[in-house]
Image (tube, rainbow, N blue to C red; front, side, top):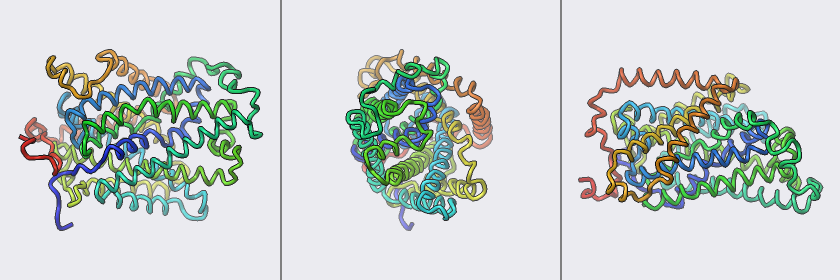
Length: 472
């Protein structure tokens, strides 16, 4: 690496960002996590996804307001530092990085499991090691390469979901020996009603439902490398409600209309069941290709998001100086290397305890995700409160329903944390989360000098193609 660029480059187009945002909302939370949510709540899980989707829309609009006004690589870590203080920015940035590492460990492990479908005799850790180095290499190339790879990964997932929805509707209409057409969609309410598990079951599913939306905040991270953030970011964020209705609510509604909700996931994946019902013989193989693509997409975006967050923190003096190093392609190569090394822990875990890797990962990731969303909302709330009338009028992408939408969403996310606390299976996430936040507080007091997070030290490098006159 003989030559380096000074800063990141703007290489992500509107098409890239739309599909990065789309891919972040479609993953294991839909393909597998939704089955557990259905078991807890029954058909009422559809309402839970709508409520959760409305909440994450407000979170993303809050993030979008700040990202369009100030498109920087550190995104919500930078905004928390600016509006809530350096400690808040430090905790937010490192908690997001922690979230990405945890989720990525789950995804690389999932990839090893999926490859075992075809190669059961190959040790899982070999696949995990191979995919870590492959995705790490992609992230070391120009950001446009990352954008293109993520575009095609997401396109495969979207095509699979659309095919499943169309196939499911065909089964509802024609039966194909899988569904009694006389019952129509009555399975959504005929067995125990729409709330078969009662209000308690409905509430209990929210911890899993919100986990499914984790990662959508990567839209803010892309702003620092978007070619036209003032246009690309709003377009990506405004499609979130459509994605939620189409890819979660409609998908799960079709699945539960075909099969009674009690049997979802108990005899293989519902996706496999639908493809088999359409007469597609190698349905399991088709699904395996889709979930492998989903895992690759998630690993790709996780490394990108965590790397850019660490780069932004290094710009503010909240991470080691080495993380500021940028390759001649405009990529923060050191942060990619650090993420790759961190993921080697996944290789070790898959070698030592291949059957126990997933025990608490999902709940820990959910806590970290909700914490980051809360910090985004609080940062935007504080930012707007400080603005005068003229500054508010000048906003290019103002958040809707101000201020009640923000306050209600903050209250809802606190409620979800309470759900995690009362659920015996996920309670350990609060213990781990509290310990993590305590460690960050101590690390901040010990290693981050106040003068390094002063306002003049928080200036973030602008992309190389931005005129010098604009940085005055």
